[in-house]
Image 1 (tube, helix red, strand yellow):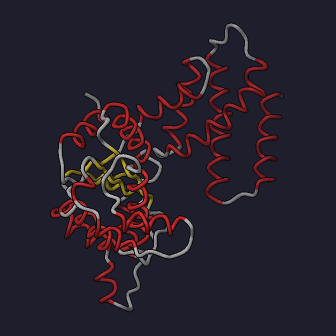
Image 2 (cartoon, helix red, strand yellow; image 1 turned 60 degrees about the vertical axis):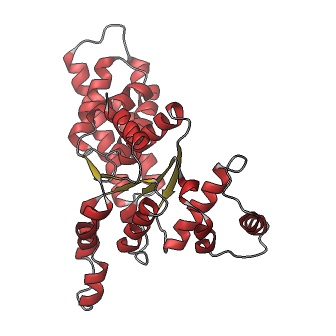
Image 3 (cartoon, helix red, strand yellow; image 1 turned 180 degrees about the vertical axis):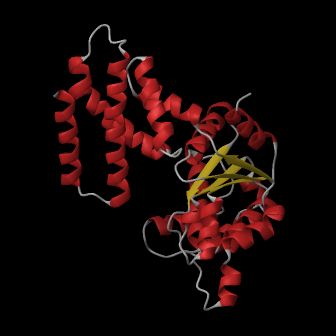
Length: 307
């Protein structure tokens, strides 16, 4: 049984559990979760996933609001959660007549309403500075213990630690209360039941390359080697790299490709150009090179290859 199946089966068979997925940016945490979500959707008809991206969220009420209305939408025709009061609230809100405190609606929801629900919080470390990790962990615990549903948290612990290091030293009490790593270490025993650390995504990278690029295995291996050497396990960078390679192969490589190209010199030259292309892509996304500069860079590379 692979990792995706194990996670899906765990979330299907257990209740009142919190699963944490930790790993560096771009390593494939969200990619893994989307595969798990797909597995759950296909094989467990009774399970529903509510996905909440915490990127930029400023307070827990924004999170509650998203959970409540995604839950209501999911069970619009079949669930018994919508009392007349809640139904009226939702109808008025949809027409823009009133603003509703999500706490009010959330308080109406019972644990039965969250039966077979999995709530996933992604990008925990990318929330607004106004929203503390303590509040998020408190909400996770509330969902687990009061609503009795499963929760998944996706984050990069190193970034949480860096956020802690960047807190102002002038206000020690604020730093103490806002210490992300401190809160995580303090409450994870109570809140988090299992933790998955992703430190290698080689198989995922190989699958992405083989699925997105139509070329011989030798060429795919060269692309994967470039990824391993220069991308630091960042799948987002790999996807950008693939976009350019597809164009590069179409405009240059495929035009001079021969039936028999087993020559090691040819493959060595191809890898050299892929490396150059990848380095410019990294520079573009790291240093905000403008679009015209990026186009010029690509044109120059294409000219060199044709020559």
